[in-house]
Length: 118
Image 1: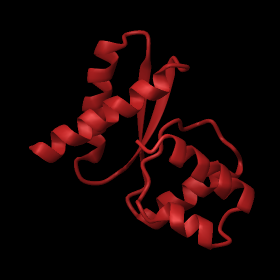
Image 2: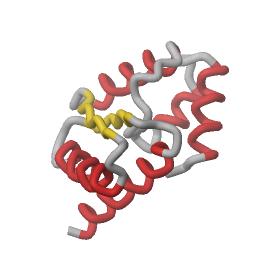
Image 3: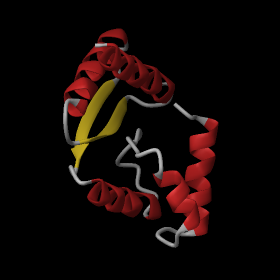
Image 4: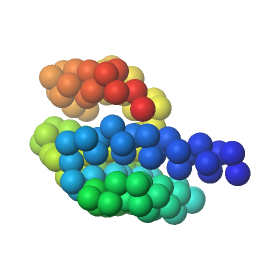
């Protein structure tokens, strides 16, 4: 129960930070377990607080490697399709130490994570 409340609360805080400049926010959530359900619940609560903001929750592939590959494509293309990414805690370190993405892209991603760690 505490974990559920924490997840929902954290997502609402993150959405609040993004909503300052957005009317539609797209959130990616790993498509397994209750995470998508919790994200949709948090989105509804957020939209009740901020009725002029629409939160779209998209679920990503269930396999972490597939999700990572999808994200890397978005990052390299500088896509604006997703505003809030649900990432595995080890991925940023992997991005910096591998050649899976360009150094410029890895630097840009890390600067955003560091400046907004939520």
